[in-house]
Length: 579
Image (cartoon, rainbow, N blue to C red; front, side):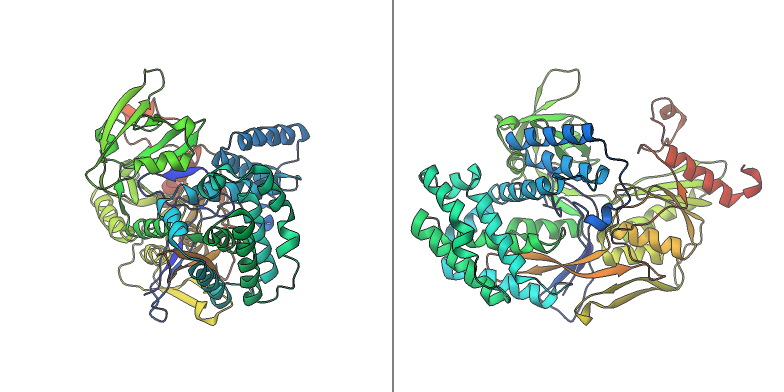
């Protein structure tokens, strides 16, 4: 059975402690939900639409204000400080945001590229499954794995692969690794630094000069580099070849990547919408882990951990001494086991909290409620598109219907996407017939049209909220609602993630590969990549939870986009009463 997954959010430096998926493209991959479409023709493959990380040049075009040389210099200085402190996730976030603001400025793209390599390397070597694979895999197995990766690229990637570029990227990854303390500590703890540096300096001229115009030539280059590293440095050949594997995947585009065994399993957990963990979403924050979100009813919530708390130690180890992934990995463990964290709430003394790791269900629908009882305006926040979303949405819709829903606001802000099939199912609840989304790839098997069915269609007037972090499956939904004239789109332009990724399990080490296999298009044939969905009503806004009762009104920050969505919903119900 094959799956198509659709990730949307750029997540550099962001980690879901409950799932710890690495989800990004050019910077950080991961941490996000995916989307899936079953495909009986390819039983060995699972297909996905992945997470955007750093947008490409086309995605950034026209989005930046006039360049400010002083600001650019300050951003570069701050980025270099983060690099010097080896805070790669934060550096990635900074450079990605900088590129959005200053798409034509020099240096940001190069700093982003190098930071991503270091970040990815840190994630790999913080992953027990990856370290074990490198330790136990022999040279022949590693070469076979690299060959399998390139074969999958040749068969399924959306564009014809540039083998020279893929091999060169592997050399670059190895060059960076040979200067990275984490890699050296894991693989060459006794090697003299000067000797390693001399070898690193000459590496490209010694292994990369030959013509590389097919995958077999690329494999030969990796094998030659591995043999040289073993002979002159004592480096295990599997360690060298894995850098070529990751380099090849990363060179394709921001959304393709090699997945370690743990990362592959975490992708599957996200598809299912459940995991074992604490039930928190984290991001790095000046040497600590900032709690971005706590899942209702989770072990973390029961233990008194709240959003905006900061974790400064895990089982007695200070997070300032660990990378984000190392600290987050310490939060993982077997169901029923415990972890002790030192949590800090602003204005209060640090406290130790003992939390039990448990099975956690991730809700995809939040805050379903009537927000304007006079007009019957209902609201719900759709956080991701996972396997349970269609069922959860049905439950929420019938609840709101019983409460008097006459119009519905669906909030897709910050929604990174998810299952492609789920996005289609959700659109199908509001559209009675016609094409919802189509996909087109180099391989004709990737050409597919998803259509609506009339049965079970809700005809309630719609308003859809989006922002710059609404991506992939979110854009499929918003684009379909726009093209069908089914509702009003309010907010700011969406991310612009318009490609489909396939999840391909590999035969060795239980690892996997995420590859871009197709592009997707709206019902009217409009592309999303680098363009996104532009709202009919543009609003610069701050995201906030909706005010569900008057008691919350005074404390709630203004949410101009939501207020505008409510006005639009009222107008759909009673135009004459709304100015």
